[in-house]
Length: 396
Image 1 (cartoon, rainbow, N blue to C red):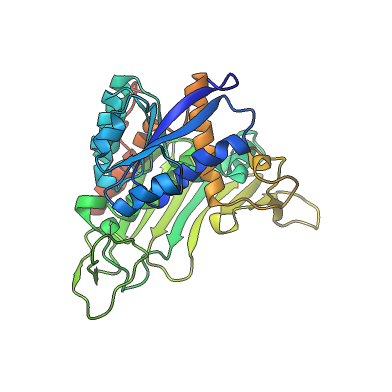
Image 2: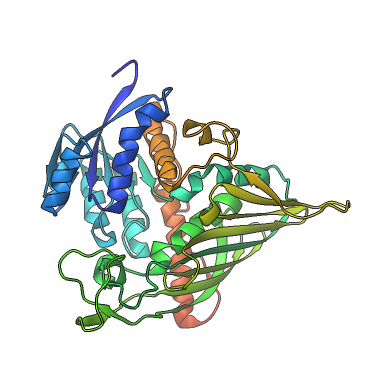
């Protein structure tokens, strides 16, 4: 304890992009949230890359770094484990952390296939450990405000939802064949990687999805093979050896929500133009909302009226909305992507100290992958598919 606060020793498994983001969050939380109930401590980082291990200690302040992730998970001075490694190694890491009695925060999608999230949820429920999942966009202050507007009835009865996550990270045909494009390392493609964000956001705002139908496409079928460790932002040459892309670049979906609204979704990693367009539109009988990650600090709000001055109003982010003031005071002073990571990590750590339930956890991840499974089933059947009730009566 420090000043009445609970110490939480953290292990981070994988110091790639998201491992670094979560490590920075642990460093920032004390300065951002002085009224916190917890003091995070970066205890150990596990990574197979020697340079990353060296950087973990030198630049991020971890007490130590190891090559073997099992050593980090089992360490007695570790209370919580952040799983930020490639998708297909999530499950052994999660199961080992649960068996060791550690709280677990995992980056989505928890494994690469729907059954992996189910297995993770069961392991955590059996061990009785706290869980969190990195659907970080849910924590954008204006997304939280949108949820409050919807719940309060300001939009009337919700009739339609449009969700999309259109990204260019895979649009270059010379982009390397990294792990994200391979079934044995990533599992499914955009439905696991970015549609999971859109579906999580939709259910966060409107509630459960009951049935779906959709399609998929692999737009770029071959990519240059990497030499050594590769990021999906890396680039090869036309003359380099190429390999097959094994999962989907594009997916779309129609759905019906349990509350009666209809929905449409699109996700792509190969479209040219939208650079990171994680966006939603919510339509109701009395108004509508629209938000786009590319303009993270703006919410478009339309309210039905009979006067001449109708149209969308731009609501700018500011310290009147949840969490925003921890980063900057006033109105229309912007926050960014890693601030959302800091918010979700703070909320998860607070839950460990206070005992309050945290959401989204592995149970909510099961809800998301149940929608994904119904979509996958529709690819072959070409028919509407019901969303399986995989966690009914089994909430963590």
